[in-house]
Image (cartoon, rainbow, N blue to C red; front, side):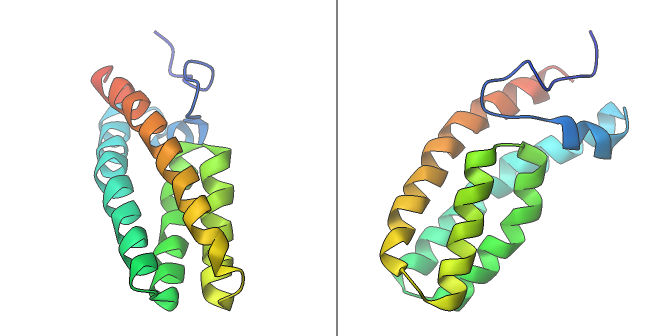
Length: 122
């Protein structure tokens, strides 16, 4: 089995993760476990921040999530997250945030099973 996973999945592109783990399956496993743990936790924090209208906190959580999402390789999630960060930081067009969070959630529900499959292959 080759290490290139970029075309294996519909919702994730692990080229960056493969690059960062440099062929070390132990490191890849650690990174995948981190993603599986952090993604739902960070998303829940974002929802809490939105519900409490803590825009600065939402911007900070979204900023932190940028580096995590780089490993996932889902462009739609990356764009939604970046937009949330900007809107929360500037407190502009806040009415768009629920739709963007819905998009993140939809994609999160798609990428999590694929990340689990990849982890099970290691």
